[in-house]
Image 1 (cartoon, rainbow, N blue to C red):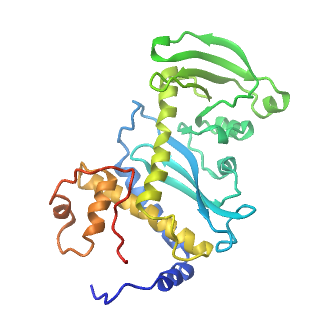
Image 2: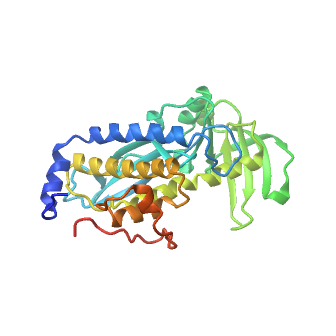
Image 3: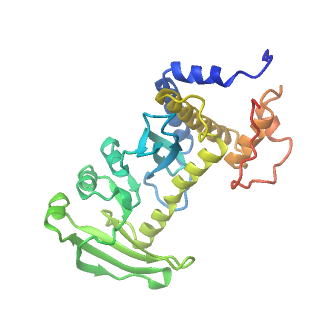
Length: 316
């Protein structure tokens, strides 16, 4: 390959600082569009033909003295990775990188809402004014109700309690100011997970799907948590080459591009390995002169434990 020695950290930091991160974002978006087409018919755990997204954010802690632009706490810096994940294939279709002070709910203002799509969100995104904009856009949301939400029941539907359902109610908001922000009816579904024995109360504007499907959909939201875990553990975005905002965003978008490239390769080559296993194999043979499919079929990797990363570093 002509590499006499490993490049210095300063060389990588300078490259990340001077090359605009928007270039890597555009590259990642091209890959994302291709991956979504490949996974358009991929099942995700619930038998639905609708497009289903999971919306969440993860915080990457930074040293405030080294990253002064990344305001979070008084003596702490951080960036937030706000991600809209297409559950078919677990493809991140929209990623917004902000400093740590930006509240999760503000990202709802930047989403291009898709009519007919279902958005899964946790309680941090409950803002009835913003949720009503989703209703007006003919998009659906499923979220958890806050404990202090004042709701008045209008009527109830019969539920199968053997499946864990507690109730299926049509409700309206009682607080005048909040009701003004969301004047329409809402659906409240109570569910108790039979495995963990935890009780959940969901709010949605979807009155068409069965109550049990609403509960199952919210459970699928954990795919976005697994995506964050995969990114942090296996793509090394917790250590940055460069302290500028441009350098940090560049490295994050390169990590996202790597994730999507592996997902595309897995689908096109019809591989049965997990994304982690594919990346593990590729990381230990980056300069081998053989076709990728041959490299991946040399030996079946039996250790697919995602709890710890054993990826080798290219430059030690």
